[in-house]
Amino acid sequence: MPHNIILITGAGGFLGGLLAAALHADPKTSDASLILVDVVEPKAPQGANAITIKADLCDKAQVNDIFKTEFGIPDTVYCLHGIMSRGSEDNFDFGIKVNVDSVRSLLECTREYGKDSPIKFIFASSLAVYGGPLPSIVTPTTTTTPESAYGTGKLLSELIINEYSRRGFIDGRILRLPTIVVRAGAPAAATSAFISGIIREPLKGIESICPVGNSIDSPELDLAMWVASPQTTIKNFLLARDVPAEKLFPHTRVICLPGFTTTVREELEALESVAGKEALEKVKFRDDPVNRRIVSSWPARFDIAYALSLGFLVDEGGMEPIVRKFQEDVVAGIA
Image (cartoon, rainbow, N blue to C red; front, side, top):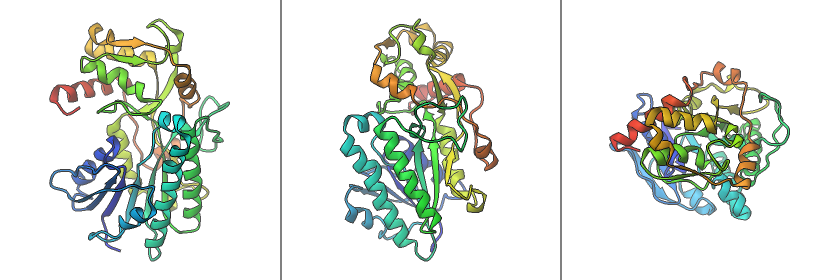
């Protein structure tokens, strides 16, 4: 099988676009042939050897077609597409169709076209697979009991990927992502969207709604969250491709990517520290019990020793460096 043919589904999304650019910029993959797929035709990084495809991944025939491009069969699949958390909660059937059924179709093609040499299948999962009573620190053996349609969909796909890997159909790597902050672009249909929104919009001089608490003094602002920067997350996506399969746990392909614990209050303090009181005043409070319930069900502290032993990276310095980096991107016109 030719080397460095990389398929990304969800390539038109925030992380998909960053991943494509990072693969093109990395010396190890700068010559890669990129197959970039999404429901809206994605943009390719300038100068990249790339095919961009508009496809409905809920259509099995269209999924099959993306394995038959002029580039040939991919040796790596990054599965990043999906309906975000609040969107899944509000439209259960569509969420399952996209977050489970289309992933299964993609897996079947990965299995079929990788018969001679199992294809690496890197899946973007989520800490939303957790819920219910949790230990103070989540470990690799903590039971998953999601409390949202999004988390349930992600967990169902994880189980199938583990089974396909166990049987040698694919070489799976399941990355449970922290909440990514700060996400550039328009707000997503995610329960966690406000975690970026209360930084992103104020730094652009726009008001943002915080759905946790009704004022800056609300105790609800002490809600703890497990987060990571997009820059570190993308570096970890690249690293995931190179981790030898024999170094992974024999019973699961799940890796909880490193993050750090912060609170809504600490986010707002970092915003004020970087951009001043004027930026903080752009945040308006409107408590949303459904949103707060879902985010509160997610764990906020993880044992990351396993991920670090595999070479994955963690952000240093808390929220302030992340807010400052985003402010620099806004000033530069790239956020």
